Image (tube, rainbow over all chains, first blue to last red; front, side):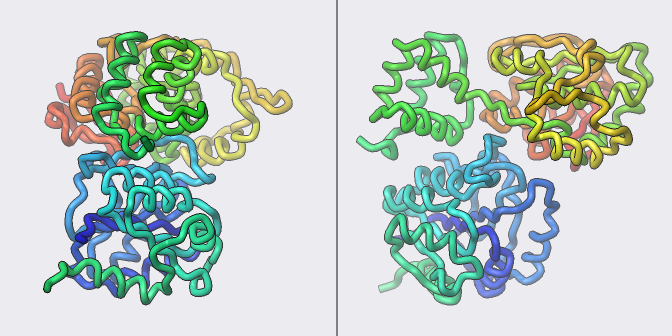
Length: 191
Length: 274
């Protein structure tokens, strides 16, 4: 099975988790990664610069209609929902907040599940509300791979625990092991 | 059949039905958004698949009206993106000041919060008496609300913060009267706003204006429709007129990218070339 995209959702504690994740992923990591991190609507993109300082991969804010490309990392801009079209391009909307959040993890995950079907990996990390649970459910329905951070190891356990309670994710792992898994799944299988 | 199996073609068929029966054209909207709205409406109304939904749209006008409201985005706020309004004060007002009268077209004004914000700025700059703001939307229900100028008190704290960040120097409470859970915008702000029903998808040039504001509307359109609407804006602007888009919208990928200069690249403010 070769996966075509990874979606990651996180809120509180997410900055540290993402910093750790991107300091560990190798430069040749190929599957595009799309992230929703809950942030203040007026936030500037300083924090993306911070992440880029420690990352071998290049992280950028997703633009509307931008084509999702191999080897790139995209982040939902503040105060917009990020969605994925069937043709693997981004759409942004200013629709009402979902789970008090814009961007919302559910909105990204549900549209990603419908665009990538079983070629999608959904990862839910540390966070303190239940955004992302419905999205993980949809990814599972569309036969994508679901991964939750082990709540015991998360800075905020609520978000991954909520997803785990609602679905049985394929994997419940520490961040270190999630990184290992993603790197393994990124490599084409050679017999 | 599960919702996840709904294909692009089935959604297009549904939108075709909406267009032929009601004249509202969503066929060139970005599909992820439409898909989400359809799914929500289906869940709310207990419909099992998109064919049931289509038949309900064609045979139940109240259901159809609700669905049309679903597709129209009415999320907005006063001084949304304060940095944009600050740039407007600094970079655009000096241009507008040079005209003996000023016409502004606010396309897709929804419930009017940003039109009132514009009126406040023009009043503070001493320009409002010679300004007309044409505020248009295709959603009549939202327009009626805009005309009333009554907004929820719960939002005022945020609007006040936005106003101050936008460079506002007055007390924001000067612009409304509080009435229990609501605030009513001052009559003096309403006097030069003309509210009108206009559909960017199916109608053409609205008026000749000095400035067009259309923020966070184009993101819902596909490339073809974006191009078409950008042409309407271009043809509405006088030479040297100003186009203001949402913070994630651009003219870069349209046919008109070389017909404007940038007044503020980051805040997406453009000036039509002479």
